[in-house]
Length: 332
Image 1 (cartoon, one colour):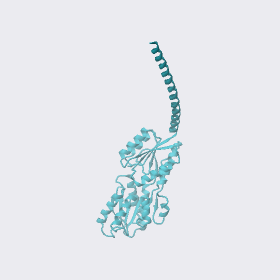
Image 2: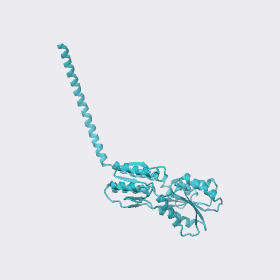
Image 3: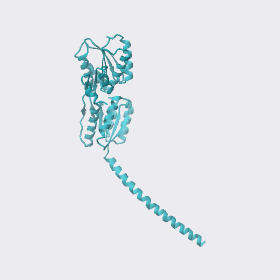
Image 4: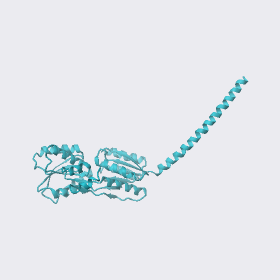
């Protein structure tokens, strides 16, 4: 029995010794881990976190601007961007803004789905003390810095161009943007005002194409049936390039493109190629890189605690056959 007890005692001491060695080894590792975690926390505190909710990643221009913003932000590693896609749904966009607020981001960039509908989101961010940047499209309320171009000006440039170049007593078909959206209304009104120097020009018909290429093509096909004669209309003006390109395709398919001037807005690559080929007459350049850089500059000001003001304007520019080569190099 004494031998058994002695053996148990020896085994107990050996287990305690091994356990003690194991504890010492484990303690050293967490010490290193804790230091690394401390460094990560410090780095996270230095980050300036920005929530970015896009109108729709399926929209060619808004995606181009988003990509340009991503490139611009690379110049400052201290900025962290959280992206969200509203996919054209204003309620979804409001929910995304509320998520950003809950995450306590330092600023929120909004490409609004709707001029009126976005107001509660802007006001919620205001109440939380988070600065708001409205990128490309304004809000009908709340406090924010607008970075973008005046949509009325784009339409006005289209009107001026048509007034200067259309023949006497010309008839124009107008492809509207999505109904109810502020920028759709602004572009259409600007176009009508730009035409006022030519009382002989008539807007023959005006139908929405919802900023969509396929929808623009469908509307144009209906117009071709409705106005079957080659002299029935001399121009198609669209509130964006995608609808203009859709109309162009319908006219080409029906062998009705000759003698018809086509104008769009945004200055996307396909539109510039069409101008170069003589298939479109004009596009209004909405400077995606310029707006992205403007948004980045406003973020830099906010980081420094500076007031960026209410507006950072990036003017629209008219593109036609005389200057298209200049813009080809700017658009990817």
